[in-house]
Figure 1 (tube, rainbow, N blue to C red):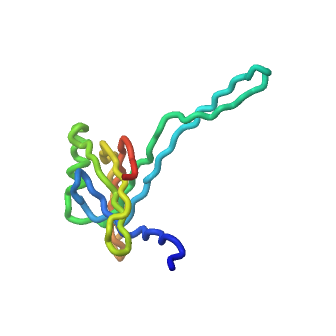
Figure 2: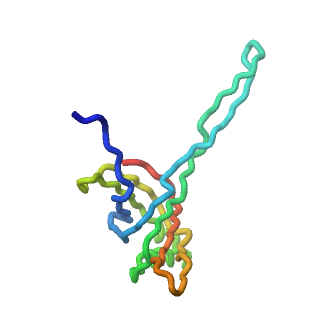
Length: 146
């Protein structure tokens, strides 16, 4: 008899941009959203202070993707559109898809109008046995679980 639901492993995921898997990534972070709090103060009929907290503006964290450097130029080409000032061409919709242990899709986080605002490569060092890691930071206009 099952004792509860198993938590998902954080290692089975993929990144889709406009419906296509663009690269293999080793790490994803920034899957978060927040809402500012508006504190409204007023006096009731008895002259006592009443404080109400109301939801304010929404914001989303930037999504940060990390992967080993390869000969693929997909990310560089995408970032190149921003560097050339082609913002509309650079805006892409995408998804971060999580899988269960059997490889079935379990959860999907869709983001819209994303574009890379930063691309960097980890430090390189002669004699090291570390993999060179590329980090891509995406700004976007919304993240929703689907």
